[in-house]
Length: 231
Image: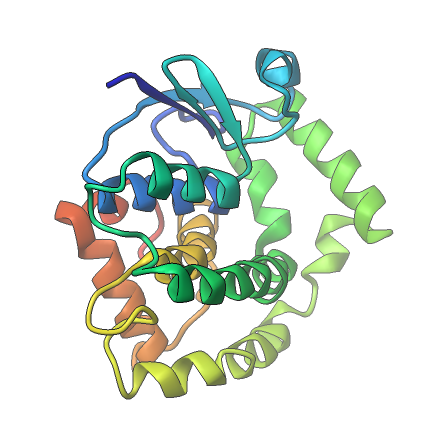
């Protein structure tokens, strides 16, 4: 089985940090699949351009490219139906589609305001320059200004997790008794933060914290073993 995954890294090629790549890392492990990791950096767009993408993750299956994390998850589900399901049926897939949007907006979007100025510290100079220029154009202010009030901003972020928190008080995972792709969508954002920033997103007594700990230990501790901060 020939699977390869382009993953975003910085100066440390063993430290993948894209939230979207982590969704797929967890999805592959859930399916019992392994993929060769192909380290990719922000300024290496020409490397994946032939595969029809400007960003990662990009999955190659027998050299056929599949781009975008949601598309890749669906591809894995449909291409390997004999392996554990990522969605638990079409109803679960439909609900995961909504959570995919929520994960992009509330989780990745919310966390980015708290850690964005820490990300360049993980990058080589050329990639850090690209990241600052592109993100400051997007935000309309410097990265330091974006996260200047993160000590108060994190309080609002934690409040935004209340629906998830209430769910986790009644079941161990978003997917129910066991994790599925809905969990990996959300976990990708938290793992992204853990890998690039020492900033503390969650209090230790938060059910979301306990949920994150279980996913860090999933698949023989795959995510926990990836270099990161103890937060």
